[in-house]
Each structure stands twice: as C-alpha cells, then as structure tokens.
Image 1 (cartoon, helix red, strand yellow):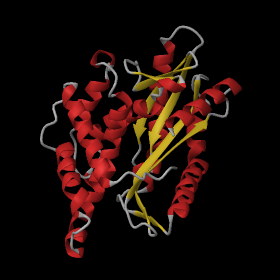
Image 2 (cartoon, helix red, strand yellow; image 1 turned 30 degrees about the horizontal axis):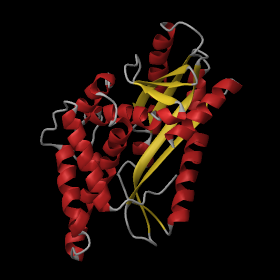
Image 3 (cartoon, rainbow, N blue to C red; image 1 turned 90 degrees about the horizontal axis):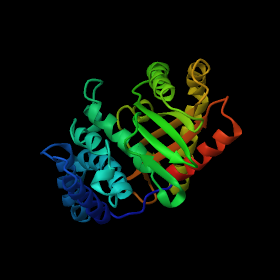
Image 4 (cartoon, rainbow, N blue to C red; image 1 turned 90 degrees about the vertical axis):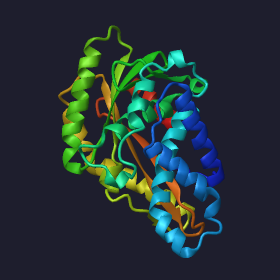
Length: 296
C-alpha cells in the first residue's frame, strides 16, 4: 500500500476536473452525492487550516466520507480522460448509474448498493488500464469489465460483498457468470477472474483506521489483506474446483479512511491483491502477477 500525499487543494482540483469530464462525456450529474462531495471538499480544502475544534469535529464525518468517495472518481477520470468518447463503450452507462446512491457510505443498505457496485466495476477497469505497460481495459466487455494483457483476454465479474457469510454465494454467482462468458469465447486466450470488494466486511461502520505512523499504517493494511485471504480463500477455492479451469483467480480490494497519528491527516487506504487459484498454470500466474503490478 502506498500512502497518498496529495494536498486537499490538489484533491479538490482533481475531483472538480473529474466532474467536468463526466459532464463532457454526457453523464447527467444531478444534485446528489457527487455534487455534495464537491461542495464539501471545495470548502474544507482551505477551511481545515483555520476551523475551530468544534466546527472541525462537527464536520469531520461529512469530510471524511467525501474524501473517501472522491478518490474513486479521480482514479476513473485519470485512467480514461484521454480516451475518445467513442471508445468508452459501456463505461458511460456504469458512470451514469454510479453517480446516484446514498451520499454517505455508512447509509448504504443491501437495497441501495447499485450505484457503488457500478463504480467498483468502472474502478476495476480504471485501475487495470495502463497502455504504456501493455495492459488495456476492454470497455465493451461481455462481463463487468475485461482486460487485454499479453494477447490474453481476462474477463472479470465484480462483486461488493457485505458480510463473510455472503462470500461463497457471491463467488458462485460471479463464477457462474464467467462460465457463461467463457463458453461463448473462441480460442485459448480467454480467462476469467472474480473481483471482490470486501470493504464492508472489514469496516462495516466506515470507521477511521488509526495507526501511530506511516510505517505501522502500511504494515497494518498489508497484514489485514494477508489475513483476509488466509481466512477466506478456501471459500472461493471450493467453488473454483467445480468451475471452468480457465477461471484463474480472485482480485481482492478494500478501502477506507485512515490516519497516522504522526501526521494527523486523514488519507484513503486503498489495497489490492490477487490470489491465484490453486489450479492456475505458471503462465496464468505470470499474467496475474503482471496484472497486480498494473493495478497497484
């Protein structure tokens, strides 16, 4: 995990550029969560320097939530801002649906997850899209997203999972979807991957993750990911054992706001990992290694 070092002024500038880009590609940004985040960050990018302790304490939850949400839109914008509108494929549809939903992540319920689900799909494409590294997102994919890497097409189904008890069911659903996609593909260059966001499992109340300094923060986040995979990988391996052998692994992601006490500034902790399936070949493991390097 790398700890972001951008100032709030820079974050506000990047987010406003992302919103302008959304509008330019035809997304209707109506009053709602995205415009609320803009108002919050535009005010606090300067106000945090002089705000009273009472004002800061009262506004902290809105500020933390806004900064948390903003970074996904920034990442998507940075990945695709230079792409012509005609090449964006289904990305625009995801983004149009993704600008809706509850303003505060903590207010999300199983019935109101749709917007952030679509943003996770768009973010998965964005984090993978690095043409200079030979890794390109497939924006007209038959699956939630796709990636072209070393002449191989990786088809990805994305799931945001809200509890440990729902892991196996979500993996089954995603791998079933991948089997249907793979069954229609011709040639040996097609693979399937399940991508899961487990933020709500690890931090259901959207609490601030506090550590003493940057080093302990990074180490703690790494351990959290390692422990999650160790505790839960058997659930997806059990499913993959009965699935198409070309489903080669799982991408795991979580994110939440964190701070190191030595700096006392909230930052977004954003961690990604790939867990190859037990049956993945040496060639497939190399593909996944190249993909995780691109995503991180």
